[in-house]
Length: 231
Image 1: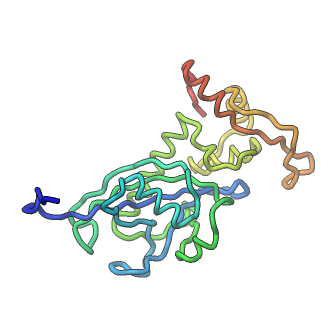
Image 2: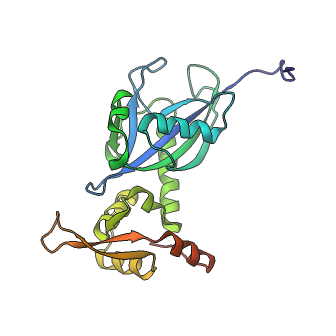
Image 3: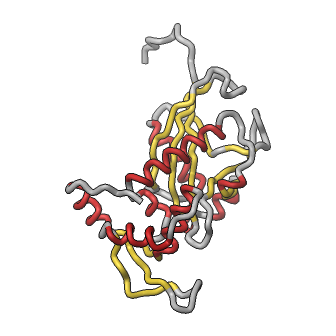
C-alpha cells in the first residue's frame, strides 16, 4: 500500500473505558479500576484502556477491551470525549477516545477481573488516577446523569427484575443525593413503563416488595408519541 502521508508525524490512538457498575444490594455506583502493570505510571490506579488496532474501529476496540476485562458482550456503551492534549501521556503523543460502559455487577466474570488486577471502587472512594483519567471519570459521570434524566438508561445497571426501592437506590447513587420515596414511586409508576410481577423480594423485609420489569417495547411505543422520561 502506498504511503500517502509519509511526511506527517504518526500519532497513536487509544481508547479508555469508564466502566460503571451497580449492585442492587449496594447503595453506591462504582467504577472499575485497575493497577497499571507497565510503564509509565506502573502500579498506579488507571482506567482500562488500550491501543486501537489497525484493522478495527474505535467502537470495536472499546468493545474488545470491555469484553477482555469483564467477559461481557453487548453491554451499554457510548463514546464520551476525545482527549488530545500533547503532554497528556508521558509515554508518547497519544490521543485517547473515552467510552462509558454500564454493566450489572452481578453478571461480570469475577475471575477475569481478578486476573487483570481490577477492583470495583465506589465513587466516593476513587483514588488519584493517572494522566487525565480523573477528568475522564468526571465527564462520564456528568454525561450519565444527563442521560439518566432524559432516558431510562439506569435500567442497564439493574437485573431483569427489580423492586422500586432498588431502582430508587440506583438513581440516588447516580446523582449522589436522596429522593423522596413517595414522589419517586409515583413518578416511576405514572410513566407506565414497568410491568409488575407477582413475585416479591423478601430478603430485606418481612412484608416484601413486588418485583418489576422494564417494558422496552412500551418505552419505544411511548417515545414515538413524545414521552418525556423525567425523574
